[in-house]
Image (tube, rainbow, N blue to C red):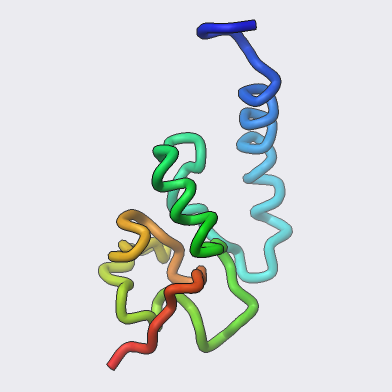
Length: 101
């Protein structure tokens, strides 16, 4: 199917997004998804993949909120990353993490 029809990829994306609230309740630290993966440009998605960004890290000391590229967290814990040029979770992590000075 082409055009605006329902493709397998779109169906899987919708199912994955529908499952997020359920999985959210199972998260150990209640990670908030700060950017909808379906709305990221191809470049933004590739940058997150290349930098291995995750919404919730196991590394307690290397979190986005302690990174020098992170700024302006909101009430939900979402802030902005200069490297990824977009919203990230304060409890997240990527390979570009750098200690605040």
